[in-house]
Length: 285
Image 1: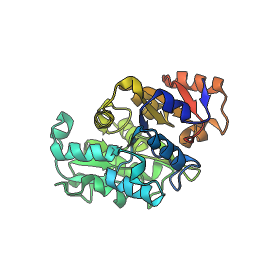
Image 2 (image 1 turned 180 degrees about the vertical axis):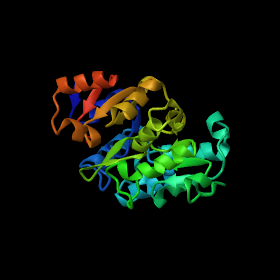
Image 3 (image 1 turned 90 degrees about the horizontal axis):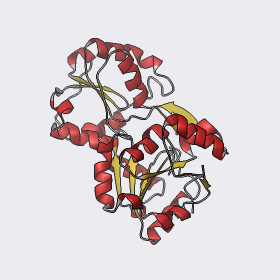
Image 4 (image 1 turned 45 degrees about the horizontal axis):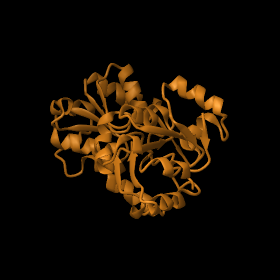
C-alpha cells in the first residue's frame, strides 16, 4: 500500500474532503502537528471540507471544542456528528426503529453529552425499570473510561428491563493524549451479548453520509474520506462509493506502531475487509 507523506497529492486528484476529527485532526487534547496549515492550504485551493465524526454530541458542541483548539470554522464547510443525526432521528421519529421508542431514556454517559436530547421531549429516568430506552453516549468519569466492566450491572439491568439501546457513537475506542479509552460502541457490543436490541448511529452506516454528500455536492469520484479506523471511516467510505485514505495517526498509530510497513498496512486492510487507495502518514501539507 502506498504511504503518502503529505495530503498535497490528494488535493490534485480530489475536490471534496470528508475528514474524521478525533484521530485525524487532533488527539483529543490538541491538533496534530501541521493540521491547521494543511486545512488552510486545502481551503486556499478551493477544496470543500466536511468533518464527519462519531462524536455522541451535537455538531455545535464539537465546533466549539475545535475552535478552542485553534481550528476555526473558516477551515471547513460543515460538521456532521453521529450525535446530530441521532438528535434528528429522536426529534422526527420517522425512522421505523425510532418510531416505536417511548420517551423516557436511561442515560449511560457523561452529562456533557446530553446535547443529543436538548430541546427534545426526552425526560431522563433515574433507573432502567422507569425508562423506555437506553441512551448510550459512552463512558463517564465516575465509572471510568478504560473498561466496560464497571458498567456491567447497569447494562444487565437495562437488558432485564428489555430496553432498546440507542448508541450514539459506534466507535469501540479512541486515543486521548496517547491513552486508549473505550467509547459507546464497546457498551453496544456488551449489550448485544446480553441479548439487547441496539441501534448504532454513525459511521460506517451510509445514512450518516447523506448530509455530508449533499453539502459537498460533487461527483463521488472527486471525493475522498480520510480516517484512522478501518471498520468505521474506511468501511463507511466504501459503503457510499468514495475513495478512502487511511490516516496513520490516532487508533491506527496505536494499533500498528509509528512506522508500519506498506506490507503490514495491506495485510491489515485485507483482514478488515477494506480497500483504501492509500495511507497518509498524518494530515499535513
